[in-house]
Image 1: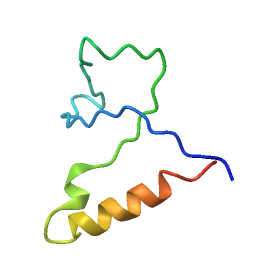
Image 2 (image 1 turned 90 degrees about the vertical axis):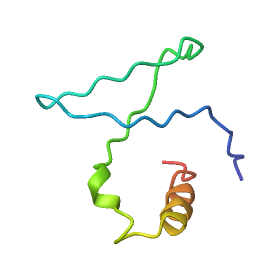
Image 3 (image 1 turned 30 degrees about the horizontal axis):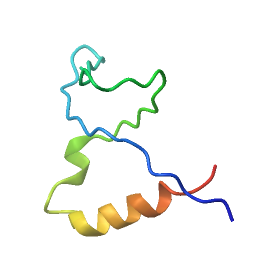
Length: 66
């Protein structure tokens, strides 16, 4: 079984303007390539999704070897 490696992550909320987003990375973020996953923020309101359950689900699928 292949081991899962820990990765540095950055979570940023951004407003969409003219169908574009802009993300300013910290100065110490020195990676040359990134993977961007866009999730509409309003689709995960506190009323509809338990944050702990969503986090467990996300972490379980983020470890798949695609």
